[in-house]
Length: 468
Image 1 (cartoon, rainbow, N blue to C red):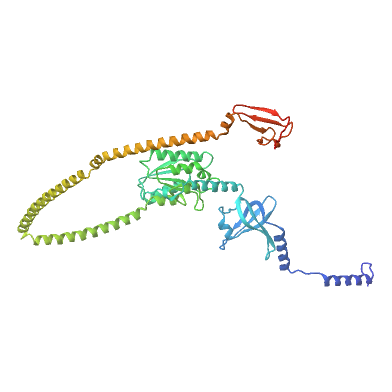
Image 2 (cartoon, helix red, strand yellow):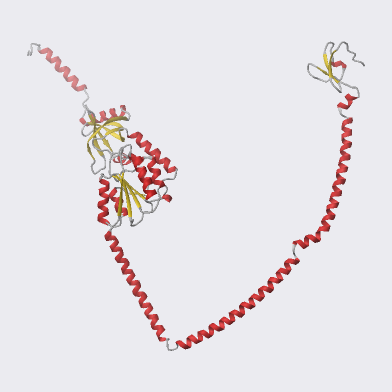
């Protein structure tokens, strides 16, 4: 057979080659291939940082978070498991530009490679989070967050100062709650900017103004703003705002952002509310609850009054039964009172005489044992002992002076200076300053120093006589 102009022998050799290749090749299953690729990815890619935009975000009932990281040209699947997600301060949202750290792996059932995220933060938020943590730690060390300095919120304030944006949703939420729960509370709205560079300064000024000028009028302050991004809430993480809250005399509730948002103002405030509406509900009692409480108090008052009335009525009945003998009882009591009065007066006079006698006895004993009398009796003996001590001291001083004079004379007699004064001199070598006591220690030509009683001289050895 000939095909494409090639001899049959060629195709026979080609078939033998194909058969040998089929016998030697390694065939992967899809599962084995994906498993090996996963191991290659995990072994060759250490945890990496990736920047991108979150899209197609979903969080099923398992609590794991699945999303896509994308940029202008590409995308990659990512998963954030529940445990890592709960540990994050920032909760991811679709459209956020983020930085994430994780390891590269492959989801074998679908053959898709993905990033298993361990940490996630908004781009540019890392420094903000670190600054927030450092400021919180500093203020905590200074004691601004201690429970002992927290002031109690009044149960039903007469006047409420609301420091927030005049056009924001927070003020409307609070007013709506107040009208629903108890419309009789006076509300003063202090408008401030709640985001941007000017916000922190305006908030501090408002806090100082309310605490200084309206301290007698305002019972409670609510510092509020609605939800927003972390950057929008930065004025409430300002150190100046924290110090202004801590210095205030009026109880303050912080209601900033959503329930998951925490700011420095929340920690410095006396009470933290998760939302502005919750702050209003916390500080304003519900009218129906108060009506029910008043009804309960009225019931208790009626019961107590009824029991008291029954008790007094029975007591009155008992007194009425004893009115027939009332005059005799009053006369007997008057007689006993007069008798007791006389006995009391007699006992008091007797007690006073006894106390006066004891006082005179004590005064006499005190005079007899007076230190002044004792000291006067001892004065002659003290003077005699003083004279004897003075004579003894003078005698010892004279004796010691005599001994000192003798020691001085003996010391002067044995002093080298006294020997020199009698015409002797001290000879020493100039080179090594050794004192010469024998002529055999000298060398002809050697220089010597002669020390006299007054002054010294130098000389040179010309001859030596060692003697016998």
